[in-house]
Length: 310
Image 1 (cartoon, one colour):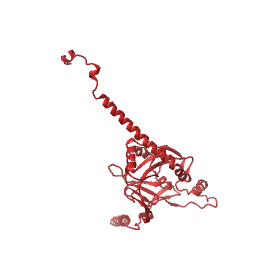
Image 2 (cartoon, one colour):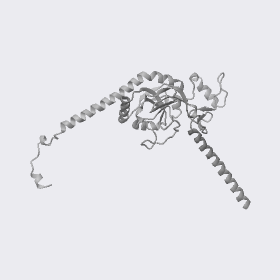
Image 3 (cartoon, one colour):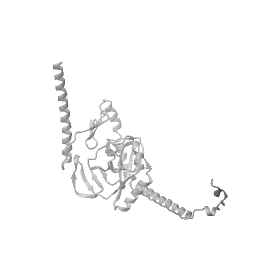
Image 4 (cartoon, rainbow, N blue to C red):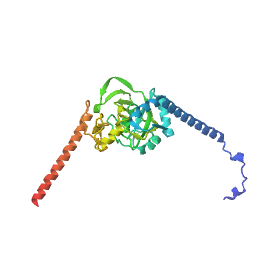
């Protein structure tokens, strides 16, 4: 320690006080109050959303689940809340409910980072296809089975979407036989899907769960299907008058559910009704099939030559 410091007078508490302490304290308090106001604003959006849409969501889920339906608020990160609140102020749109199904281990990341568009300033990759464009795929409230097909557990997210899509006077046929019924620059309604191309416009509000998801059960089979399904899976004829469930059940674009084995099958690509994308995809698929057959033929020919020489 320097000798001059040892001989120096001990400063008083008033002298040690930060001259900008009061301003800094006021700034911290203002930021805290702003965060509380933002939090209360998001919670108010969530509360009104549940009051307005809970009955419709419950009614749409009831035919496709076993057991009671439970709603839990999604633990959405603060910055995800704020960007959604900003979008509600910037866009003149209606807050509509949608579903989003994924692997159960993904829900924590979704709540912390928000629903993200794969490849847009992130490391995410397209997993289940992007036939209608690279965006965030959700299901309209009347079609929960669409999202249930992607769930690994009996729970999925109920999302709010700031929807400014304009209904089309005439529906347009899209790839896969689905029809485009409404669209805007950031939202597209295709069949039962609501595709969002702006990450700020969609947020998970609740996680809904039940004892079991039954996405391929029709509304008229709620009480009879479990018994008949079990009998059919055991190679026993179903009780009359209900027919046996179909072997292949369509459940998405080029995707079908094989009921006897409980596995999903991916069907060959077919050309689109309009445009060239589907046709090009079909050509790529056929070329791969041809190349595989050609490799097998070459291998068989080489084997025959080797056998004759030996």
